[in-house]
Structures are given as C-alpha cells and as structure tokens.
Amino acid sequence: MVTNGNGHMKKYDVIVIGSGPAGNLFASLTAAARLSVLVIEKDSAAKPYSQRLCLSPDCLHLWERQKLFAEFTALPHTRLKNISFSFGSNPPIDFPPSPDGKEIYSIDKEVLNGWLRERAIAAGAEYLPGIRCQEVDFARRLNTDAGEFHSKVLVGADGRNSWVARMANFPLRKIRHPKTAWLSSSQLPGSDSAHFKFFKEGYFGFMPTSGSHTDLFMMLKKDCTHAPQKFMNDFFPGNDHLSWHSLPPAITYAATPAKNNILLIGDAAKTVEPLTGHGIYLALKSAEIAANLVIETQLKGGWNYLDDRYIYQHNELYGYLSQRNRIANFFIKYPRCGTLAVKYAARYPRIAQNYLPYFSGLENIGG
Image (cartoon, rainbow, N blue to C red; front, side, top):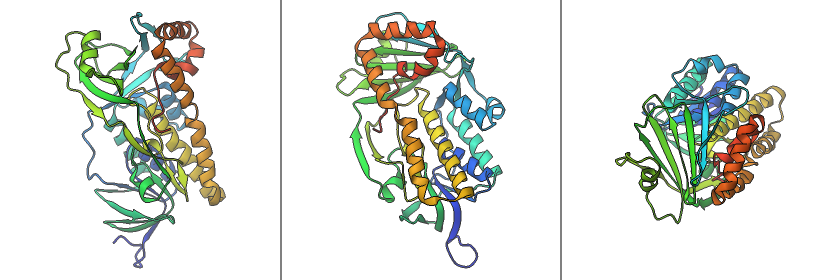
C-alpha cells in the first residue's frame, strides 16, 4: 500500500484516471499551478498508436492560450492548408480552414500524448502506470492494486464507457448510434488538403499524414448494406486491398459530467464522431476548462460549487452539437444545398470559420 508514511492512505489535491491527451493536459496544467497531482494508468507502457490526430485551428488557439504553441509546432507533424468538401455527385470545393491563417495539423497520437505527459511530469505530477483501479466512493477514496488514495478532485479521463463514471454511480445512459465508424489507411498520393465526401449512405474523409500516407475514415448509416470498401472503390478506384476496422456504435455515457467533485473530461464525458478534427479539440478544451476551475477553486475555495460550474461550462462547450447534427444531416439528404453552403463559405471565409464544423459532419454521439 502506498501511504503518507503514517500507514494512512496517500492524499492528493487531484487524482486523474487515464493518461490520454485530455488527462495529460489536465495533469500538466494543474501540476504547473502547484497542485499535488497523481495520474493512474492501467497500461504499463505507452501504446504503439498508429492513429494520427487531425487538430483543428481551435486546438492551435488553445496552445497559444497556454503559451505552448512553439513547443507544439516543434513536434513532428504534417500541415494541411485546405479542406475540400463534396456532396453527392457535385465536384469538390476547396477553402482554407480558417481566415486567420491557421492550418490543420496532423500529428501522431502518441507524439502528442508523450509531449503532454512529459510536461506533466516536469511540472511535478506523479504517474503510476500499470495500476488497476478497483473501486471508488462518493468521497473520492480510490482503491487500487497499489493501495488506497484520496483526493479533493477525482478526474475521469478514461475514455468512452468510462470506468470512473460507472464505479462512481453516475446516472448512465446507453445509446446505439445510428452510424458505424470505419477506419483504414492507404498509400494514396500526398496532398496538402483534407477531403470530406458526403453521400446518401453517410460520409467519408481522408486526412493525409505524410507525403505518401493517408488515414481514411467512413461513417455509414446503420441500415447500410454495403461494406466501406465498396464506396472506396467508387470514389478512389485502385485501392482494392484496404483493411478496415469498425468502432462499436453502442456507447454508455454519463448523463452529467460532474458529481461530488468527480469530473469527467474528454471522451469519458462525451464522445463525438472520430477524426473530424473537432473531437480531439473538444477533449482538450474540456480538460482546460476543468483545470482552470480546479485551480481557481484551490486558490479561492468554494469546493461545493465546483460541480455546478463545470457542468455549466461543459454543457456550453458541447451544447451546439445537436444543431450541427441537424445541419450536417440536412446537407447529406440534400447535396445541392450542401454544395451551395460550401460555395458560400468559400466566398466568405470569415463566416466559414464559425460554421466549418457544420460541413465536416461533426456529430454528438453522447447526447
């Protein structure tokens, strides 16, 4: 058992369960503010991720707010200067991702995650890898196979179908999403543009990750009887031997992102469709919101109001997604309208900056 030297459970200001990008960003920000932070991760070593992340311009603004932009841009990455959209049989239309010159960055997930983890450790956060959590109670007493721990705030950053949400008895809902996500990769020719293609069975996109490599994703309606390769053959003939894997459409999620100073961030709180560029931003932004509130509460007190403040700001962050769902689905159903909308956005890029996620098919799976 890990103790404080007197045989008692060890206490921290913050305990984070899960060391993905959201958990590591939260840990780095709170540790830098001199809070005592423990991060518990069930895996004993970094995962050999092959997945790359598409970071929207909003992520770059987040790095700037946290004075991390120079560090981030020093990491190995690929920059994408344009986004291309096509609806039905209409030709694609290109336009910049933002009018202020910010580009989309494609980066390996473990490169990003490793950078944030190193920053958290340098700031003083403790990490316990290869540790299994067994139970947690409403007072944030955590029992693990390495001993017992207690914290003022417990943060669930453990992804979709969160263990923290289930063990802390959050009100849970289970849904079966009406689409299935399919992921693959290909040696398509290099490009400096991401592309989204909408069609009546769903949509797909590709994200170049190097001069000769591209990540592919596809969202197909639940009642679609065709395999993803059929659509790939239609749109990009000559890629007949791709290997596709799917993400399960059934998701259990918490009805609220906070309870008893237990906060859920990233996919633990809400899950959005993968690889549209805003999913990782929403995860990182929720970590930033939670960290700012915890730091402020530590300085000024008012722990009884932490839940309410986080719920309000979290819901404000995710609240517009249902409207985006309706707009994206409308464009899929009426491709001509989608094409006209993209043409308008290309002509007025400053307006497009606010409405770009509508065209990228961002969808709120978690409610």
